[in-house]
Length: 343
Image (cartoon, rainbow, N blue to C red; front, side, top):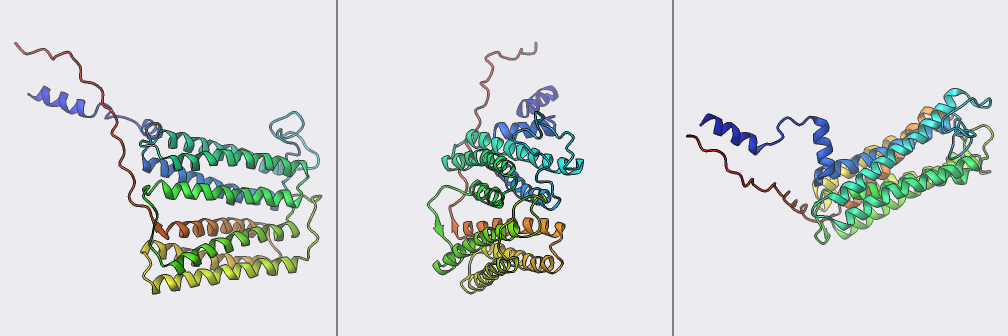
């Protein structure tokens, strides 16, 4: 009887000793909503990270550390001797290029996982497909940035691709954790309109920030072209839009508490309040300190975090029900051979 019990336990769990790598591969090849959502989160983090590394390229004057594209220099795919740039500049620019491939790999993994999710959800597949396609577009625009010797318009477009790509990443992250029912509004119409205006204001701040950066001292290279605006004028426009974002965020918080908005919505608005206040303080500090490089990178990262949170607030204004139940994995057919009977 003891042997029969042991055989039953083994049959119930045919792979009891799987290592973490095997479990990770299995969760990717046979994804669940939870594993797909984790991959989507990696896409969000990767695109936020590439904004920070792009900022590091600019403030360290490494924008032309790899002066060619798609190769780094001449016929070489990797950095070689360049008398006009140090080895550190070349390594920083090359590292930023390599991170693009990492984000692309995550995008491909997300797309494959969305395809293999059961039941298949078409909107998740479309959102996942947009990620690797957008990364390819970003790489092409990055090549234009290098070939135009860091023209500020090309640099601005290269930066803005990341917030645009984050729309798909955040949407996939949110949608993979909810169902496919018709959207049901969970906040008052006024609060929904405020949330939409808040997202538009955050986008306007990002666009104005690229003009400030294209006018300021951090061009990515000493020979790069600059916009001919007065830095004080474009900074006032940028700060005015930032204050508009702060005002809309505080208004959303007040209306949310007065109208009994869901707790998830209030938490996200509270998070955004903290982010925009910290971002505003950081912006004034870096302005009065002469725009030091490390603070510029931190400010760029903060702008992306504000954008992500503003997008998540929009998703918190409606409910689409619970996730669909996963389809059962077909089990192996029982063996036709019978176990030998004891004598």
